[in-house]
Length: 206
Image (tube, one colour):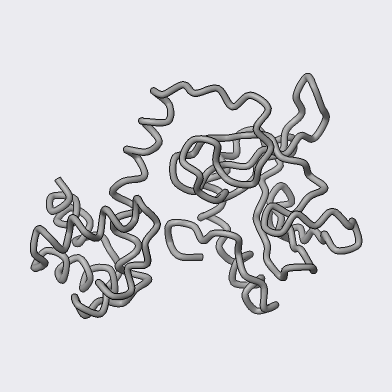
């Protein structure tokens, strides 16, 4: 199935991804299984990238793109209740958050929820806390709003110099956080110019 996925992605991929897809098509079954296993377990694939002579960022794209829909479906079927979980990593797969959503709920106005970078599970998390280092000093938590879309913003932490993105669903109820995150990568490019590092990059590596 993974080789079929590579064949389908290659014709519509960027030149860099196309080269890596061809490289993976020539890889042994042992190497492709290792790549998928390393991604699931969180192991560093740098050694495998060197063995396959692939660029690491492009190599990391393929197992994530292939396995992410599987993880989302598994999380949805599992139905494990979030309960009182308030940690900064996913309660279902322990991965870091990809993006945040802000909405009004019965319990609170403007509640922030984190959305998992792998299985897309969502859980509430305090707006006044950095998901990376736990900083709560309001003077160190800075928000930058996009000029072209005021419902998307960069959430910067001056303590750890990391950032996340949030989508305010009160401003645009039609927004889809994981999709809009990728649609506004100009914000990530701006953040990188400010020497900020994202808590976890999106599927495209930003």
